[in-house]
Length: 353
Ligand code: 3PG
Ligand code: MG
Image (cartoon, rainbow, N blue to C red; front, top):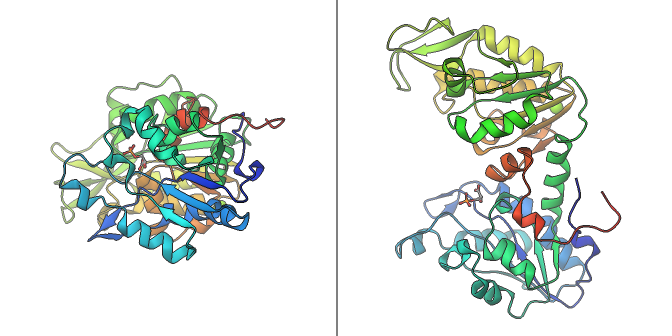
């Protein structure tokens, strides 16, 4: 993969640098509920400070504000406070939510010019937003000398490994509900995998109408529930013999053992999407079994997508995963083999491929 030029090659001393980070974090009661993306954005900000930038102007979107009332709900205040706590340097300024300007999502050149005003350089570190062609991810890159941030580059290097010659066995694990979103990725990667293990709602969709040109491994058993409820009556049944009116809300113990064995024995693993309704303890075992198996695997393991990322954190194994992507949609689009507009807008690195 051709990488964009790095912030490390930029002359930033004395300059005003506009940084686009993905600080789109979950909020709860007006506080940052998960600061993973903030922490992941700090190395680039710190690098710029260490190298003597005069000002580091950080911008990001937060949520999908539509109405005037959304302005209070999606203000950057809690994020700004978290960044200030972490870096404690007066040269850092966090701008207000880019999506408060209606031009942002239209890649409006006027808003891009507003963002670029007074800045000397632009650094895009927002991997999670790199699949969006917006003013803050693409428009400004046309107005200022543009560079890639450290997180963006790490994401491209790590996810990019899955697109190249991977060490085998290569196992893909996929689940979750949004099958349409994942078909293209699985089609692009699935043919090169030794096994594609499917769980969750996706498994049922694939059983009734298999869209894939490769062989997908489906569950052999499921945890069936009498209703879509956390405390529903449950029993383990064969995958293809779910009693009438019951729902398969997790993969069963035989499937867990089979999936875990294949994952642990792999040299490369990519996981996107839970195996069941893991928010409910009665249906969490399958998803946690996959998380633990990835941790126990000595190969190169990658997790992408909000729900599976949450699951590896809840399972307490995040430290033992090779790469946890900060991008959901962006990681899927990259693995589909698509060019990300936010990356394409940055000049390529010279002499590196
Ligand atoms: C994300 O959370 O996936 C990114 O920040 C992009 O957000 P969006 O889907 O609202 O563009
Ligand atoms: Mg491991």
